[in-house]
Length: 515
Image 1: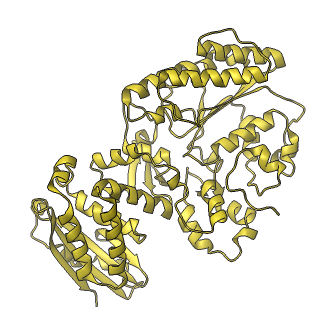
Image 2: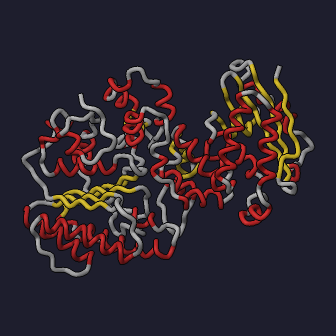
Image 3: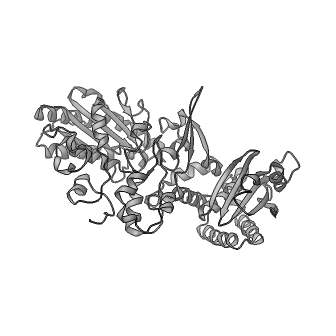
């Protein structure tokens, strides 16, 4: 069998070259059999959305040769061919409204040229409508419209609110054609990273079915554990399956957890554990948003949100939780029904995202890349040798090195979670297995760090905010936080850390080994 490609260019290329392929064609039959016309799917970048759209395109074009051996081969009417309009907004960066208009004109005109159709309308939405109508008449059947990365032009300019709103309005004008052209349309499938409200983007398209959180479509993109092990069985021989799963599996949309295909393909090509997906581009806007909102970073490990925060995203109301989830940095761990609606528990999907995200947060918080790398290196050595004096000196020295002007400029030292967030981010970004707000029968441990046969239970206090005169280490003992792990670990260390907002540093440090 041939080797895996480093990347995926198109469905037809994969099938014609006999590469390994995870069969998702079952979902095509399901979508069509359900009888819906307009579908929307939100998934993070590089998650296989474009590939699925291309698979849809080949099916509606009746190209059976690409489906040999796949589920759809004997489940589809290959004699019925439909005209397909496929528009992708995923490449390049849209600068402004005029630039977007040029992109849309180019996309529509390219399809018209390929179909040998002459377009006369000069306004882009009317030109798009004209294309749909003339393709319908040419083929005497409904048109299939596929839109890939529908929201990327907005996300390209999300930091410039004025431009982002102008681009949103241009897209709203363009997509409104889908409602007007309903009589000429057979099927519509739209993909993107974020889920903008119907009012702001798809105004009037009330029949648009959002399958993003539909459990029946949870694995429409990505590889389940079974698919991963079955399809890549030969490539997995001699590899550490448990570590691969820890690094790259874990994305969930109320169904089975899945791997990001991009990570899987590059891991097999490089045979090295690296943050392949994360390295393709994490928006500085998102990191800045989380930091500037004074977000308690450890909270992201167990974040409870309501339906409204996982719902529609819009430029006028940007919530970190919403953007983190839709962008793939957080995933759904659990769903609970309450009297007020659904409650979702979010967390990092896997080791890759958890480590890389915290590393990026650190880069923003500490404002010194070299200092950050040095602290990570020394932190690892201190834990590896169990040197608690060195561990204390690392953080004291680090906090001392941050100029006062930086605190003034960022206004972060005045909130309680800042110091604990720094600890959490450093331990996590260094690669340690960490649990924040670790739940026990007696309360929550601020931070639990695991390494080899040892466990470190850490409690933080800010002295100016202490209401009861109790030291952090005494609270650990009083609450018996260690009982949760007493039968699992022989070496348990209790660490109490006191911070001062006035001193902007550690003013209390105690360590005890549990006997």
